[in-house]
Length: 201
Image (cartoon, rainbow, N blue to C red; front, top):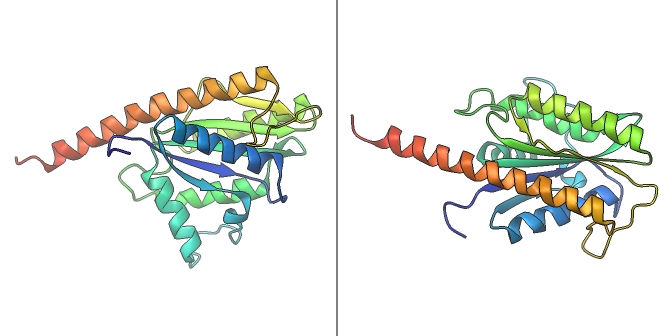
């Protein structure tokens, strides 16, 4: 990997052992690596943080997680749908991004964010996707033009976690391509800014 490779953070909002969401998150991470990115993957069990509140004394896990997001050139969020909304686990983890408000690029400012939701029916998945994209906007991120809402009623996955249905797989490939294309633009702009700021006046 070169220093020009974009860094992508992948978050899964499910705690269920062997869940579709976690398996799909791992496949998305592997696919990003295959396309030349470096990855920080946080499955659901890595996001079991205390309920977010400002001023909370944070442990190493939270600091490590937030450092990965500060470094990120792109992000992929995946969540199961509970009652028409993303999981509380993922929302709580996203709330911790508030602690980046004093960084040079706070929150998810300028970063492309791919959003994927899974539900037992299409209506719930679509409603959850809209909420997730609104959250990304609030964090100053750029939701990719294509978001992916998946119905799990008849969804099967191969050994790597990739959906076997061609339409779902195509959508995920397009969404990841959008994340990586824009992440490279972000990476290039950040590198240019760093060189400019380091140049003598």
